[in-house]
Amino acid sequence: MKTIALIPAGDRFEDFFDKIGVSLDTFRDELTGGWLFNYIKALRLVDVRMVLIYASARVDRVVQFTHRDTGAPVWVLPSPRLHLKSRHAQRRFFPDSPVLTAVSSYFAIPVTALTHVLRHERCDAVLCQEYEHPRFDTCVWLGRVLNMPVFATYQGGHEAGSTPERLVRRASMRLSAGLIIPSQHEGQRVRSTYNVPPRKIAAIRNPVEPLPHEFAGRHEVRARIGVGDQTRVVAWHGRVQIRTKGLDVLLDAWDRICREQPHADILLLLVGTGRDAGVLRERLQSTARCIWIDRYVLDRRELWSYLRAADIYAITSRREGFAVAVLEAMACGLPVVACDSPGVIDVVPGGEADGAIIVPREDSVSLAGALVRMINDRDMATRFGALAQRRIEEECSLDVVGRRLRQFLFPQSPVADQH
Image 1 (tube, helix red, strand yellow):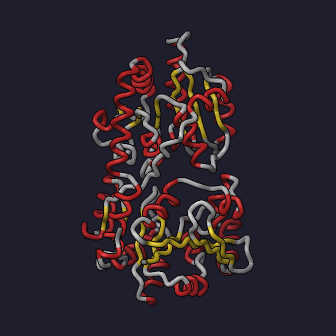
Image 2: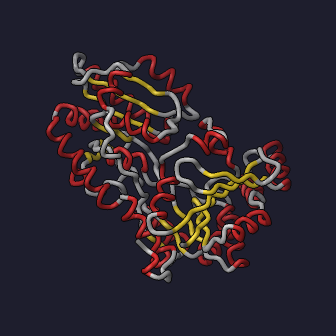
Image 3: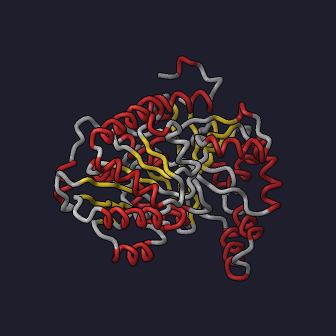
């Protein structure tokens, strides 16, 4: 069995998880689903074991535990003092300096502790979440010292913000073992920006865990949130970032639909929270026929239940890396109405052939028209939902993605090792 270490995004565990109210204990015991844990499950099917490694300013010694749902080992390493001091100074005196922000991030990985964990777990390779971050550069150079290949997977991170960082990254890109980039637009950008050869880029989609055959709950969830069986429900889920996620466009379109069809039995279901939750809460005071589940849903079964309670899925992002939320909705058999942003188009390039209606970004009128079309034509919605679900089963199932990942990460491993 091969073992790969995953270094997730961010300088520290709390940089992301504090924003959604997830502690280490919650991460260990309650958090499920999403691309991260689906990666673990997909790779396990092909005899690849994944170890998660974080840094944190909240621990003063190395902490090791097992993620309850997947059984994956998780290591939490104390953030280096140099990182803590440099980050504090940067935020206090130069909060807007991209150069000093990057310099601080280069100190974020506790290299000695990380080396110990990689050797202790007998890791064969390292996989970084995102490549346009100092964490990736550090891991690539450490990999050269340890004679260990370092890969990266693209999940929507943005390009480097400082010139010195970009100069270092050009070398890191060339020295890395490979990049997993499901977005066609992003793959083209990386090739042209860093002159990365095509053989080093794998367009492998994120794996999506299938719903259990016995999973139902549609009527129960609708009853719990006060929705009738005949109500046509449009769902959205994700982090509440008004501009990035285009929630203003979605709500403008929804207001138009409600004005033009005052007696229609319809509902907009929003699931998730984030930094703009206060702005959204104020905006929804003037929005009719809308329910908002204002929290980050930790349990994938609960998320599935909300999606299964819906009839249509809407995504209106202005910018996406690779729209995992759309994959989750499609796996639940929902037809999609989507804006044409890169990262979304990559998920449903065939448009209606993939079970989706595509409309221009920023165009709430076209979005409203597409939603009304899907709301009123139940047969079309059912047909599109079936197309969407079949596409996920063919291209994003755990076993399909697991095989592709193993072939890319460990091309020289014996075929006999694989299931």
